[in-house]
Amino acid sequence: MSETNDQFDLVVIGSGPGGYVAAIRAAQLGFKTALVEKDAYLGGTCLNVGCIPSKALLHSTEQYAFLNEEAEHHGIEVSQLKINVEQLMSRKSSVVESMRNGVAQLVSARNITVIKGHATLLEPGKIKIFQKEAPIEIAATHTIIATGSAPIELPFLPFDGEKIVSSTDAIKFEKVPESMIVVGGGAIGLELGSVWNRLGSKVTVVEFLPQIAAGADLDVSKTVERIFKKQGLDIHTNTKVLEGVVHESSVTLRAEKNGQPVEFNAEKVLVSVGRKPYSESLGLETVGIETDDRGRILVDDHFKTNVAGIYAIGDVTPGPMLAHKAEEEGVALVEQLATGVGHINYDVIPNVIYTDPEIASVGLTEEEAREKHGDVKVGKFNVAGNGRAIATGHNQGLVKVISDAKTDQLLGIHIIASGASEMIASAVAHMEYGGSAEDIARTVHAHPTISESIKEAALAVDGRAIHAVR
Image (tube, rainbow, N blue to C red; front, side):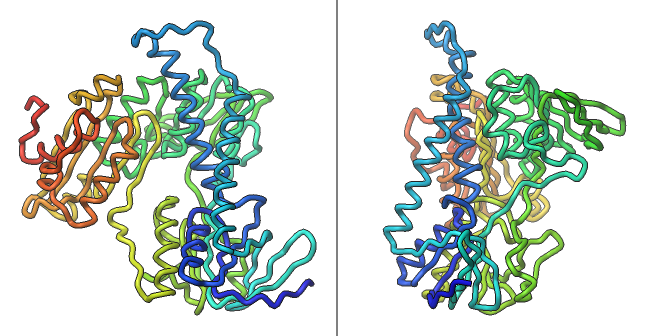
């Protein structure tokens, strides 16, 4: 084994959004920092095979769908429109490559030591890294595990990369499948289902739960289901997949819907039923780090594991698997190590599904708010009444504002609209300081903008919406 005497203040295992952000913040605060990554590139799942490439495909296919379905209505005549999947994928890859280079430059500029290889914990403060040439050992005062997550594979539908695929496979198809079944109606399934539906694939979404977009406010889920069905997605809720049979050119799924047997057949099946923490082969058992029954590393309120000097953040720990959550945890943890102070308000972490229209939310659903707070006030505004939405043709969706009936403090804000992912930040800001529905109602919003819908929904909490007929 190749030996190294390198002693670091901080070693971060995993270079996804949580890991590389933690490393950069640590370097800013004066830590001698190393960043360990087992894959060829920095950035983790999000940059390389998740958030970034999927958003590139979503944007490209939105342009295609507009030209194919709406351009004529806008006075734009297009002839011989066709999709070039090879170029579509080439653009996606160039976006990813640009982001990879950007992260590498950011890390290099902070003099962070990047070590490629698979890290295994030998003991607290001692890490072995298996590389192509020979393993090395490094030492660390503090170690952060930020190894992320991987797609969950169903036992009866193992991934083959061809007919039964994960999200990683579904962002690199070489041609548009004639048909595709999406098992799981969550964010990833709805986004990738939308991508291929726009390009002409017959997409069927099969969801075990009574609603798609699990965890969303019920009004939101019902509304987007209607919108997606209108777009051509065939959606089946309350449907449990029992078995998959792979044929030469297709796959048949046998399922049960509302207690009755049903079958679905398609060229490809995308299994999108969630993700599992990447916590194997890290030496957790060797050093005695505790995990739960799902393999997630257990941490306290300060991201500490039960082993001194070892911490964990992001998807490998309990909680929502969101890139921005991991980023904030990385920053908060490093600041705690440097100054003793670092905090995250988990009650105001936004959640987004990047379909068209986008779905964004922060805080409690109406159902959760009533259960937790009792009396609540609810204001709703239909985006169809918004001037900018009408002018741009993006007039599907709604905004819903929920506040405490006694104090008017904001409890939850839910948006279905074009640009909802950008709009949600203002909602988060108001909730961060404990703002009220009245605070949003009194906030000046530029006109005409779709974000005015948030103001209208806040006004509607007390029956004062200007651009809505009661």
